[in-house]
Length: 369
Image 1: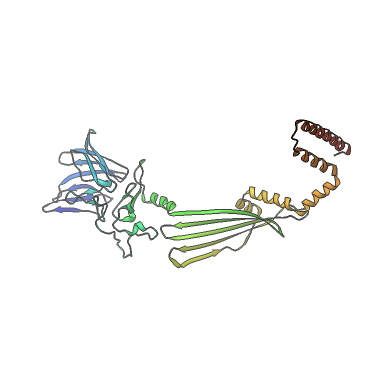
Image 2: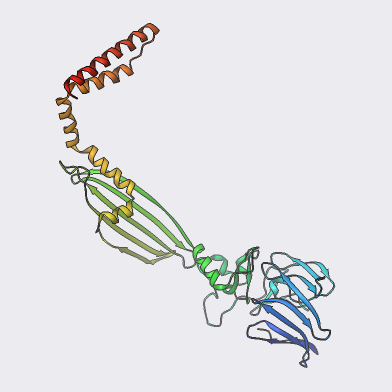
């Protein structure tokens, strides 16, 4: 936090309130020159003590003072900024020092004071490497993100929608958009928590005939990579449900199991591999339905009924008991697929088919089918 700037015999003293931003500035003798008004941690107005003139600040989504007006709304200072802070002056009838992302730009050097370090907008980087109060290998680095290993970079080289709060890489003010100011650190943490976890996966299902019946098996495979810690987690969950095929119980649910295996490892560190296994656990019908889905469970039950040897025997027995019914079905199917190229033959065929169908219907009626 800057408290004094001195250039020969002249300079400025900075007086702060509860935050780190100066609410007033004075000369080296302590005589007030400017007073600043803040709202929501953003500079919104300035009063020149000598003339009592009031100026209003209008900032963009990164906090840069794009427009400064007088008390009547007339534009006194207007500038656009390049991504790394280069200024394109449009109007400068009453120049002021607080420019890119609201930080003070020193006229002597052209550098922006970010608190911990000075930023050079012409170079798009900080003038000194990032540092930490505690001894660390690489200050504020996230080893899963190579951009953070550059200790001179500004907001990990993403200046269009991010702004640095105090000159430390970790403490940028957040993700910004055109709808409002930068997010707070907590909001940023919530957003980056979602972004840093990259998850992929797939689900596969199959039906198998076993001595116990039809077994429905579903495997869910997911891989999650945390770009901040470099840890990859692989999870495989296998759920099975069995349906009976024995006589009198065709399609009935007989049991279900689930098993989850998890492997975690940090990239480049074989010693970090950890394996977890819940073992095979029995689950109830409701739990199996929730895991596998009612549709797959119903299909497995119907498959167990259709593939049961007793189902085939029941159909054969019914055919022996009602031969004319199955004979009629066969004649009807054969007639439907018999080619009759000539029109007369087609007419005779349709006529013969109709007579045969009528006779079969009478026979079925007489037999009481």
